[in-house]
Structure formats: structure tokens, C-alpha cells
Length: 280
Ligand SMILES: Nc1ncnc2c1ncn2[C@@H]1O[C@H](COP(=O)(O)OP(=O)(O)OP(=O)(O)O)[C@@H](O)[C@H]1O
Ligand SMILES: [Mg+2]
Image 1: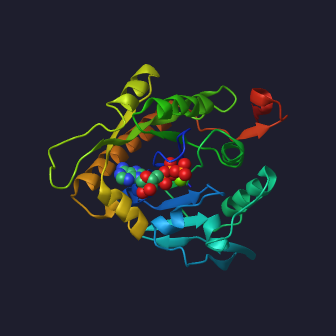
Image 2: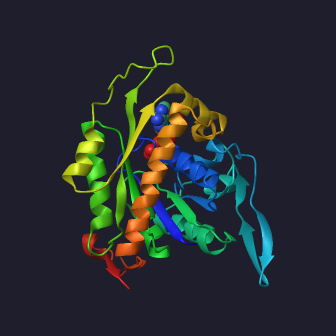
Image 3: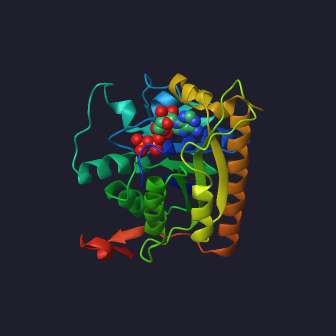
């Protein structure tokens, strides 16, 4: 796996999973080998967004060992806890069990050769985030935010988590989702429901690249519910906005890989707050 990109936000419901799904299919359409790990153990969205909720990864034998083969659709290989639970079954696990499940989806899976593995994180800055960064050398992070103040406050914390000295995962950029609403019948009108340019300004303030604006449009929501990410509908304004964001993300990744050494996975030493994580 060449590049591991974590998609995070801080605040919940700002569109991490929608953005991750669309970045993944855009990268696949550009010809890259793409994997998507749904790290939201308690609220997995990826199986529905890719219309594979009924599927199950099958076991394959690789070098004498049994491995699970990710489910694939639209050129994206996926693993999610959602493939192993019933639709109405809640996962009620303490942190260590969730970490174990994540580790199985990482180490007991046959991902094959990938240019990109995108990781759809749950909201917040908690246990799952640490588990992922402990298990994987995350190449870079993308932080998604809506332009409104209460989302930006959490996005700032999301960025700060990756930038913490002991974690040190380069932030490739901030992506503004639900940047403005445009109704189908008035395509030239933009309504700044959540405020204007909030995430762009945050990126400037934190000296982090700005990866672009994704509009709030009904078809993006419908596409997610139908299991066919909006970016697959080429040449539409939504697909073009995801394409631009993907291009910006890839160029930031190239810069990052040219200028910085590979990320090291973090090592958890104690459970005392910020001192809990140290470099190996
Ligand atoms: N650009 C958009 N236009 C229209 N609807 C959107 C857009 N982005 C996300 N949505 C919708 O907003 C809701 C929340 O999106 P999503 O589930 O991707 O957020 P999330 O950050 O992953 O949430 P969670 O924190 O629960 O994981 C969903 O109903 C989704 O379809
Ligand atoms: Mg989500």
C-alpha cells in the first residue's frame, strides 16, 4: 500500500463518509488502485454508500494463511464492520474490542497492491483514531468541515490531533463540505446556509492547504443513499468539485512525499492523556 489517507473531521455528520466515498471512486476513475477502510466501527456507512450492504468478504488463502478479501465495487476495495453485522445489530464494544476488529480488517485482509488506502474515521479524536495511527503509518490526513463555527471549532481540534508532536501525521488539507446550497432549478444561485468560506479561512489561519468546496446538493445525498457515489455521474457540478478536490489532495500528497520522511506508526506507552502516544 503506497499511500494511506485518513479522512477525519472532529464534528460528526459533516460528510466524512460521503467525501471519502467520492474521493475513492474519483481516484479509481483516474486509474489508481484504491482501497477504503471503514473505521467507523459504531456507525459504518460505507456498505450502504457503495450498495454492497448485503455482501460479505470471502476467505482466500494467501501464502498458506487465510485472509479476507475486501468487497469491491466501482473499482474500490472495501472492508467495514458493517459486512459482519446484521442491519439492526448495534456494535456495543469497549475500545480494545473495536481496536481488535480494526486490526483484523488491516492485517488479516488481502488488500493486494494499492496506490491509496482511504480510511473513513468516526467523528472526534479518540480511541479509534489512535488505534488506526498505531496500526498504520498514515501518510496524510484530510480534515472535512462545514463552514459553520461549531464544526470549525472541532475541525481545528482534528487538525491539532494529527499535528501533535507524538502523532505527527501531515495534514494534506481541509476540505469544505456543504459549502453552499444550489437548487436544481436555480443553478446560478448559491445559498451559504452554514456560512461562507469558514473552512477556507480556517485553512488559511492554520497554514494548511485548502482542498476546495463541495456544494450541498440533493443529488449528493440521494447518490449516497442509493449506493452510487455522486462522483460517478461524470461532468456534473458535484463530480467536478470532487475531481478538483481529489487533484488538489494528490498534489499535496506528492509534495508531502517529496519533502517529508515516511510517517511512523505511533506507539502507545501509557494511557495518560497527551503523553499516551510516543513514536516507536
Ligand atoms: N455535499 C453534500 N450534499 C448533500 N448532502 C450531503 C453532502 N455531504 C454529506 N451529505 C449528507 O449529510 C449526511 C451526513 O453525511 P455523512 O454520513 O457522510 O457524514 P459523516 O461526517 O461521515 O457522519 P458521521 O460523523 O456520523 O460519520 C448524510 O445524510 C449525507 O448523505
Ligand atoms: Mg461517517
